[in-house]
Length: 208
Figure 1: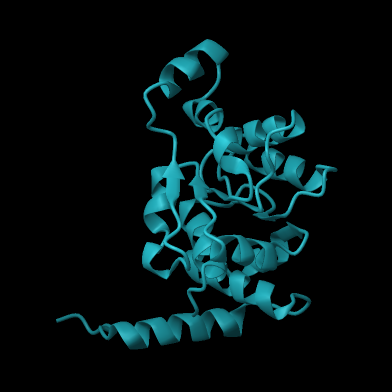
Figure 2: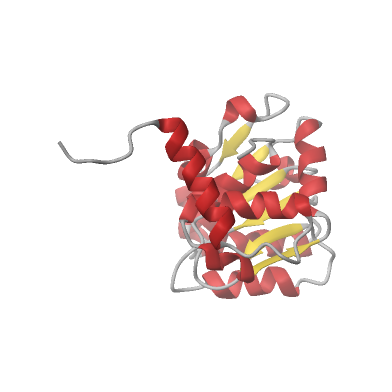
């Protein structure tokens, strides 16, 4: 038999102990450092902490919204599947519109991606919601466009689109937005569904 660690509790303990030891959380307030720890744990890349960017008191606003029953809107089913629903504080709904019947036709008509077209269905859901984007840069770009056009503002945007095309640029656009959005993001190409889900879980009260 291969000799490897099998005990779930010990794997969990050692994982978070390693993340704490290898990542530099100096300069982050305790609440944000707790969220950053979960992000590091989710991707095993301690150096992401230096690339985190945020606007407003994203942890407090996100937690207050979830405690009040806020909907969690996600851009991809993978993000939604990563959210630990049992740990959300108010039986919060987790909604992904990517599979809605009209999305494919909307995308074709607009000459854009299905992810961007799915965001077209978000405005009725956006007010005081927690938005988690862990896949498509076009979803974040389209969200910013809708917000600039007057769509209701979410309580928090957790923006972790990933990829070689548009990911860094979409996050730069979020950071540069001048409308005082409350957000947490990771500069550059890195991101992904695991990070977006981990951010939701951390705001929902899932403690390491």
